[in-house]
Structures are given as C-alpha cells and as structure tokens.
Length: 74
Ligand SMILES: [Zn+2]
Image: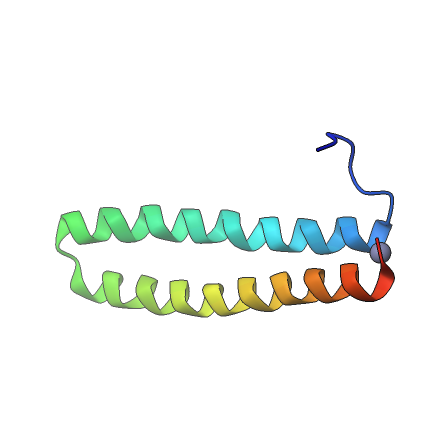
C-alpha cells in the first residue's frame, strides 16, 4: 500500500468526505459517552439521533466513493 494520495482529484474529495463523517462520528460517540455518564437523558437521545443520521451520511459517502472507483477505474 502506497502512502501517496490517489492521483484522481475527485477520488481525493470523496475520501475527504468519508473521513469528515468518520471524524464527526467519533466526536458524537465521545459526547454521547459523556452524556451517558452524566445521566443526561435528553442530551443522550439527541446525540443518539444525530449519530444515526451521521451514520447514514457516512454510508452515502462510502457508497459514492466505491461507485466512483468502480466507474472511473481509479
Ligand atoms: Zn477517479
């Protein structure tokens, strides 16, 4: 595996998109963990909702990346 970024600019954009969603998910997981520990049920419910929504966004971004790599052969 190479450490160089892929040459295709569109693929780089799609990778950055996936990474952004993964970073957001890790943040939401940390916030949710703290809210669970603090017993703040309303915050837990809201963060959990945002987490589920973000998982959906991440799935779409992953799908777009897979589709691009297949179609573009990059
Ligand atoms: Zn490409």
